[in-house]
Amino acid sequence: MSREVACLGSAEVVKPFSALGLNCFELNSADKARELLLALAAEKDTSLILIAERLAKDLLPEIEKIKKQELPAVFILPEYKTQANLGLRRLENTMARAIGKSV
Image 1 (cartoon, rainbow, N blue to C red):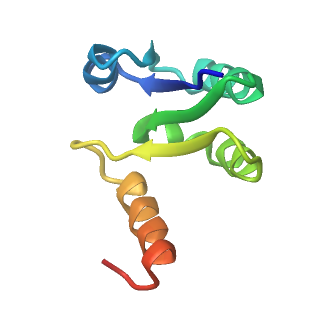
Image 2: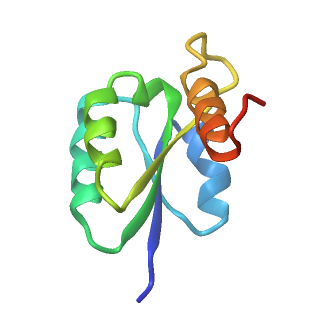
C-alpha cells in the first residue's frame, strides 16, 4: 500500500516539494488550508502532511487534533521570513523529546 505525502503552502514553499513528486497545494488562505488539511487527514493513504508556518499558525487546534491520530503526521515547515518561529520551535521540541535534551 502506497502512502502519500502532501505539502500545503505558498508557491515559494511548495515548489521544491513538487519537484520531488509530493502532492502539493498552493494556498494562501487559512480557511481553504483548514478545509484541505481536514480532508487530507481523513484520507487513509496520507501519511505525512507538511504545512507552511504561515498557514499553520491559524490551524493549531486542527493540527493538535490530527496529532492524536496514528497517521498522518503533521510537520510545520519553518519559513525564512516569518517572525513566529513556530516551525522551528516545534522542531526543537520534537528533537528534545526524541533524544532527551535540547539541541
